[in-house]
Length: 509
Image (tube, rainbow, N blue to C red; front, top):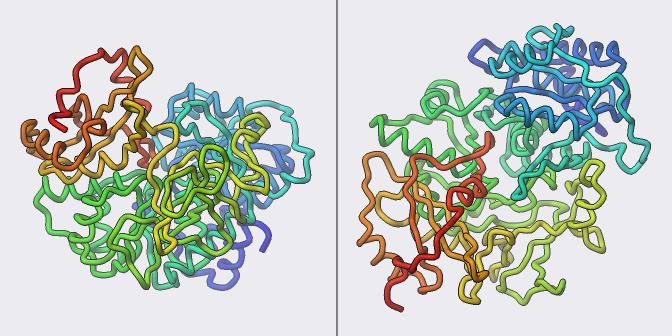
């Protein structure tokens, strides 16, 4: 197979009447979804869409969204998924950066998409429950043959806040779909709970591509609801549960607040990724489900996870496991040399899932690509003695305090073990002298009250003075993206301007 839509075509030809999607509104077979792809592809062609044209999909998870993804693949267009819950300004900025030809809105499944469609003056398309509007009559095609394998452009702001268009390849998505399906031993007997937005790599790669490859079905949802997830686990034969750490934290909080007794008779695989994994959260999740919480490391610039823990040998620590088939990694120091075994450095990657570059942004691409085809991730990590990868944090998030390197993940793990703490995030805030203060934000468990004296004693016992936060702020809920990724830049913004204050949390050495 060369293109992602061929996965669906093969399923529709082999088991046309098998159910692939289970939504609140009903079920969809492979054959029915293929018919939707046919209608969407005809609509694209009727609108004059050509290979390499960009098509923005303002969507929430639904059958129509998947059909549009596959239809773009069939006609050679590059889909640009945008979560419908984004603001009009954000969507307009992405459509402009993409130099998009058309914009589709999944109005039948999303009130937010319907509002955007009305604002854009969209008209009905050939696909039921979908409207479309022209963005520009003539968008520039891409003549570079090296980019011909592009399947989708995923816009990611990363830590900078400026959207960059990651060009994800058909080859990378097909490769990771096969790898993920093999690791999870997916088959026609499996159903995965699929709330992760398919506008992001986690949703497209780990959920959609893997399910199509292995023949698994999706219990498809447009957004995350702890109550709905528990209902699906109990009654909809969900065997695979996947999501970021924040999803599990929200689920645990709901269970505790509501006093419910979860049931999950078919659940056999539990996975988290897209953010650092707190050891205390891992332990709580494993106690809840009575089975390992698997973990992996990936990013938008690589079509899926590059490292995964092995199902046959679960880990007690928070390692991201080992490189998947075809994936390679190095730990590199600031001068570009390989770090000594066990030392921390920047993670460099290469392999079949690596992006084709940032869309029309040669400067940004050059900033992250290194000789030999290596991609400098900006993430910090180290290899354990057995070769497993431990992700320490982001290079840009590393805090310089009194001349020492401070890794937020280490502090977050310590605070996360403290009684009553639900979630913790640590950021660095610049001071006037160029130093950085360590600031921690804490979300408490339902009904908990922070005991500052006890927390101070806990910090003194487990952290060196320069690592102890100068300030700890209790907040109602951590800010996250639609994909569940923590927005640390929003937390940093809450600290500015940050007064130079004594580190009252440091305590004695």
